[in-house]
Image 1 (cartoon, rainbow, N blue to C red):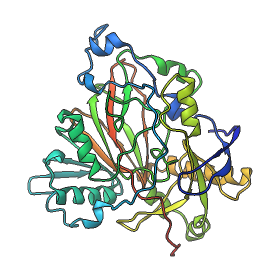
Image 2 (cartoon, rainbow, N blue to C red; image 1 turned 180 degrees about the vertical axis):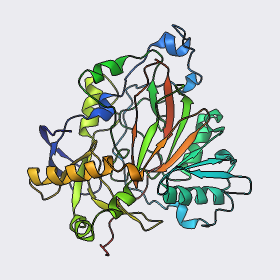
Image 3 (spheres, rainbow, N blue to C red; image 1 turned 45 degrees about the vertical axis):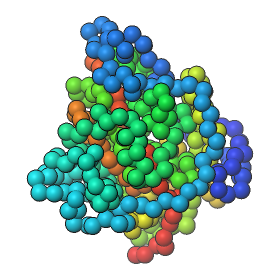
Image 4 (tube, helix red, strand yellow; image 1 turned 90 degrees about the horizontal axis):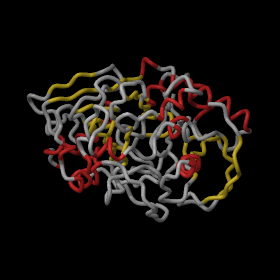
Length: 379
């Protein structure tokens, strides 16, 4: 994504003193692709051969609600308390199938909604180890929304997205929705060759999400998969000399472009946008693994580097992550699937690759985690 200079903006990052940060980069395909609005008749009643949405109470609304800046909070990761043999999560009869050696597992035979506190602790640990886990045949989408949110709160304070659509009365739910018969993607592909947009969710926040839940409501027959990349393995593949050079570096992550994209489409702006500085290498609090923590959708510049220097290094890291098919996994959505991933050590991208006009509708719950921290380099 070729950078273009945008305005200099002064913002408070919510913890540190206000800082002036010069941003680079455009809106990015992640938010260019996100529809705002839908055809009411098609979604609520059905139209042109498409059925109505299966879960109309999950249809997105944007509204004009405003929320204050996020305050710091103390996060305790449930995975720290987990029994690493996973007796309450991977009981007898539960079947697991690893998608790749380093990232991704499919699980059947366990209901997430029925997990005990010990099972939830083990879930957090298991996801931290496998990075992304697809649980099949779940009843999660049929829970009352307030129960689904209470479930998510076990893993951290729930994030309210600044711009996305949400069910009426439940701003903590982030909806991913492309309505039946939607053709807005056609305009995108007039100037783009791919819908791939690697990102780590809301990495511009001071405390971005950790253990994250995404569950399917409506799914195309074919297409709409989600790619995930293991940013621990991306770090591990680098030479010791390169790793050591990255340690100590920080990068700015910006939410301004996302808000601007929403404003341009007439969408919601629930909070003023923020810019945060995070280490380029962060350490997971449970596993102790080090991971690259940059993504082209929200990372803007390496602190202390000149623009050309920053662009060159970030481009190498972005390309390294994007081309690393041998440490990526592709999750295929199916009815009743809940995908859980650790947002601290992965990036992901939805794929807009179906042209059937079928609806794709998912709900995300994103508990916030600790501020990203770095531990010293060790060869």
